Image (cartoon, rainbow, N blue to C red):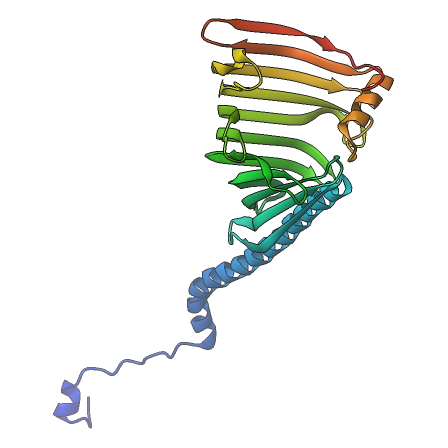
Length: 289
């Protein structure tokens, strides 16, 4: 071009660099910031949910303890702890002591520890694990019987004080006399007991179905025939209860009789190596319960 030197004409043309605007910078950062923000918000929500569920599970457990206290069975433990974050709520009670004062004479039961767990999304379903041995004694006296097992699980469903279902499962359990004799009263490879409401409600004429399953069970001190291992299956339905409020079993059976109820044995099967017994029918209750 006229007026330009040869050196300037040889230089490459200068390109105009456009500076990014604030709007473009924000748009570029948003794909990174948005997922991080969502993760932080979800984490905070989950922490709040866990603590809320933990409080519900704690109130549920406390409600069952209060229900038991109303029935004359008080519970205590030397230490308590709660954990399980982030997906479970675990409550542990060490050196459990139970006083049963609705019986004469009153009894005391002691176990090494009890742990209850609940899922965050189902805080009213408590799954318990009991650590043995468990000792039974008259209040203030040495133990008269000791029970132990490989595994012991307890499941309770419902909002206290109204249970919907209860199940107990014992693996490798045995009940022995305390003291020097160590005589075995009962022993089973597996014992499974379940009870659930199939009609009515806990406060209005509940109908309860109970199932029992035994494997390799023996009770030699009760009868010579029970010295050989047996397997048993029982399915029974209880009708005639007014409600499930805490009360002695004798009172429950008297109210069953007054209401014209009874115990329907839907199925019963007891098997040994050389014999099998099966049956069904209905058991009635007399006026004395």
